Length: 301
Image (cartoon, rainbow, N blue to C red; front, side):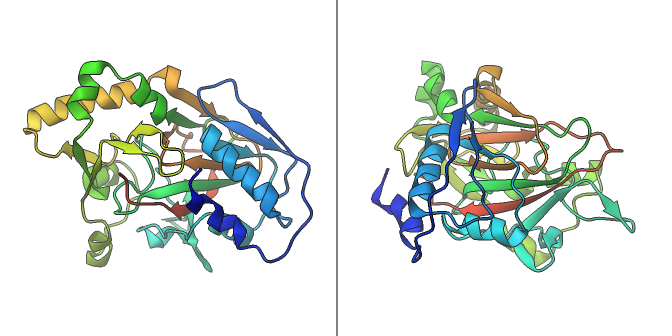
């Protein structure tokens, strides 16, 4: 772990008691559940360091039965790094602009949240100069069926990439843009409002390495997605598209995946530098609402 990794949890001036909790790895290519930790209580620097290490080791942490407020979610998220506010500020939680409402609920004829979040495989905010370090999603209201979230391990995707593909993309960069499939999503659902000029200015296209190095572990990972990656820089369009399609297909092979089946009050914390994720879908007649906070990361290298 790099020296910079210690900064977030050295800042605590008090010394709360340590909690007794377990971290149990899933029988999957990623992920672990945290049992017995209460995030509505103060987290000691020792416990936070243990959580941080587990997050790096497992890429997804599932904190069970967390009865926390949005303010407590924001405070815990901020211990890692500053938070990022989503461009769709229309769906921010009132009084908590750092919290994005992810929901298919419509009240008074208007969506209360982003109902089609995660419709395509992606890494959160890869379209920013500093993409997200990680995201935390807290279950508020869950459907009786559906609503699962899939995660794919991009370290494994890189490690198992066939040699010809590795050579074709290792030193290349790709363009990411929030608007890549926005019109397509807008045409199929009520969840995507028209963007203002100010919002469009917040999401100008950026270029990132196709293979990024995790800033804390040094591991390499693929960093392209079907949602936000539009082209490989410096290649003809047909060649770029063919390569991207191969990368997308390989990235999300079942052997790279973990499917999260939500339980009441789950808080799920994933590493956007290591993973992609996908919302598996919820029946239209069933209500689903979750609160998301997003932690700012570093410029990919």
